[in-house]
Amino acid sequence: MPCVGYDLPEPVYDYHDQRRDEVVAVSDRNPFGLDVNTPNVARIYDYMLGGKDNFAADRKAAEQIVRAFPEAREGVRLNREFLGNAVRHLAGEAGIRQFLDIGAGLPTRDSVHQAAVSVLPEARTVYVDNDPIVCVHGRALLSGVPSAAMVEGDLRSPGEVWAGAVKTGLIDPAEPVAVLLVAVLHFLDDPYAEVAMLRELMAPGSHLVLTHLSSTEERGGDTDKIRKVYAQTASGVVPRGIGKIKEFFGDFEILDSGRFISPGALRRFEILGWAGVGRKG
Ligand SMILES: C[S@@+](CC[C@H](N)C(=O)[O-])C[C@H]1O[C@@H](n2cnc3c(N)ncnc32)[C@H](O)[C@@H]1O
Image (cartoon, rainbow, N blue to C red; front, side):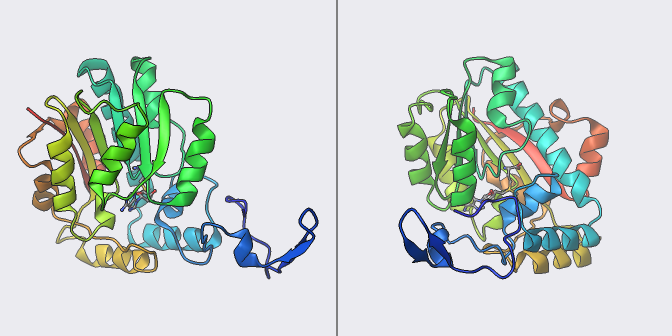
């Protein structure tokens, strides 16, 4: 498998595998269909966070986003800050012992399971992502961590995601859970039914943590530029107005975001997106 984090040499030749004594085509070295020339949402985000798991096409796309929205770099950092604060609050003060992080992304510093166990040592975390490379990284990072697991799954099949998480033995469906949909829903065209199904499956007392790229009239032109950049990726991006974002909570009580992020940071984050936590009664 190619080593994520480094550009492949140009041009890339088929090579002679000495162990198997045969010529291996480049496509054979690429069991996951890794296409380094097409920007990828997980790797663009990784680059914006200062990570190393990205290729030239991802970096180019990220720079185009930053040119359209210079606040984007700080926005992704604030997104992580909100996520970490929300997890620590839920584990420390809301009695949540299990976390289901869907669209988890490439490993970064301050992972969800680390934030959770920092305040509640018995906290369990299941990460889900539909990107096989993200899952490979996640599994490597979590080997030897019995309280966390990485599951490959697609938010567009919420029943399967839920079943896969329960199957790890780390998520008890009868117990309140925090479902994290952080910076992922804007990659889906119309995920309202899928999120509603997750809300239905969550036990009373559960929480939904959500961040989402927003669309505002003032920055409509800049948002269109971001749309064009993401149109090069497999998923595209769908910024939504705040009213439409809040609809993802259904009848959950939306908590005061001031508990999870300082008012100043929230104001700066809101240039780019919306972040909130809802509680199921
Ligand atoms: C921008 S990253 C966000 C990572 C992390 N949640 C955070 O906010 O720091 C979005 C992640 O969602 C994943 N993703 C996109 N569409 C998905 C889907 N339909 N099902 C599961 N994961 C998805 C991508 O592979 C990527 O890793």
